[in-house]
Image (cartoon, rainbow, N blue to C red):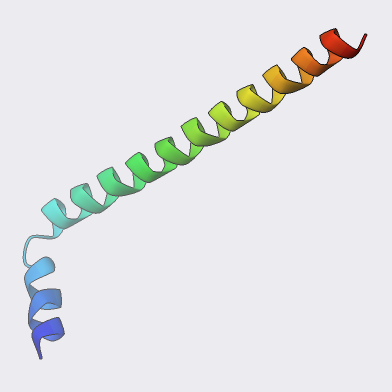
Length: 55
């Protein structure tokens, strides 16, 4: 019953709900992109260092 009440309350103001959902989705996608960029940068830095040191 509590879930049903919360679900109905979410959709009382559809525009606010959609703005919030899209904001959270954008933030999650941005975080994933930045983490993957940082991981790739770290991997490239490690490979470059190993290539220089081992000749």
